[in-house]
Structures are given as C-alpha cells and as structure tokens.
Amino acid sequence: MMSQENAQESKAGTVNRQALIDDFVTELSEFARVAETTLAEIEKDMEANRHLFQIFARMMLTIRGTAQTLEFKNVVDIAVLGEEIAVKAGGADTRPKLRKCVGSLWDVITSVKYLIVHHQEETGDEQEILINRLQYTLNAFGGARPKVDQDEIEKLLREMT
Image 1 (cartoon, helix red, strand yellow):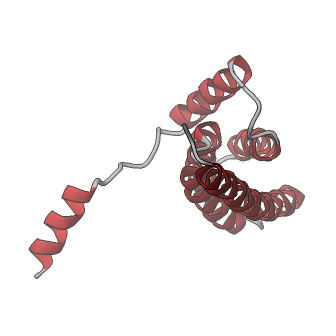
Image 2 (tube, one colour):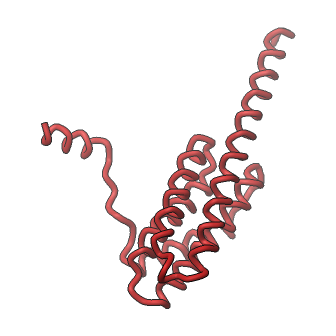
Image 3 (tube, helix red, strand yellow):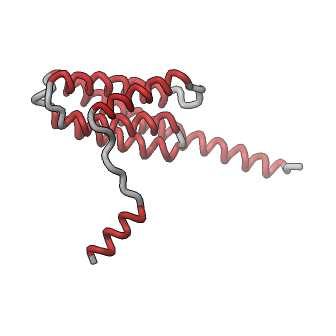
C-alpha cells in the first residue's frame, strides 16, 4: 500500500512533468510560428526567397528534436519529412516543383501546429495519409538525404586523426 508521503511525491512528480511538457509545448509552438512566418515569406516570391527554405528546414529540425524529447512520434515523423522537403525545395529547378514543395510544407506546418496543441489526443488515419503523401512528394524529388549513424561518424573521426 502506498503511503501518503509517496502518493504526494508521485503527484508532485506528475505535476512537475506536466509543467515541463507545457513549457516544451510552448517552445514547440514558437518554433512552429517561426516556420509558418518563414513559409509565408517564401510564398511571396518563391524564386527570390528560396534561401529561406534553410530556415524552415532548421525549424523542422528543432521541432523534431524537442518532439523526440517529449515522445510526440507523429510530430517527429512529420517534422522529418518537412525538413527533407524543405532541403529539396531549395534546389527545385522549376516553378511547379517549388509550388509543390510549398504546398507540402503548408501541410507539414498546419499538421505540426495541430499536433502540438492536441498532443494528448489520438490521431491515426489522417496522419498516416499525410505522412504517405509527404513521403510520396519527397520520393518524387529524389528521396531523403543519406543518413549517417553514430558508428559511421566515429569511423570518420578516427580516419581524420
């Protein structure tokens, strides 16, 4: 049987964890706001502002890292795809490809913002459909960049020394 002292400690731990989650959610929301503002700026003149895709990709990387800490799997999955599509968009060679990327990135940011706010709600089929559609878009642009794991990094560092 749990003592009253243990129950209070458990309750305090839960309250502290929820406060930490709330702080991270606030932080995530700010990153999403920056990404959204950046995307709106890109859309004003896609050719002249293509350099801003780097900022969007960086925001997706930041969102992904924070979401991983919070174990928000759907946010992580969508942010990864958003980052990769933003990287590919910077090198898109035609206006239709740029428009396709921008449209996909709007889907990314809209979904990320929703999932951040509603992180406790169950999402399912809609997110899978979106993830599949984003993956299809990414594949149409040549797929994701190659990934390097920790072992490969260590090997490269040993070779450099």
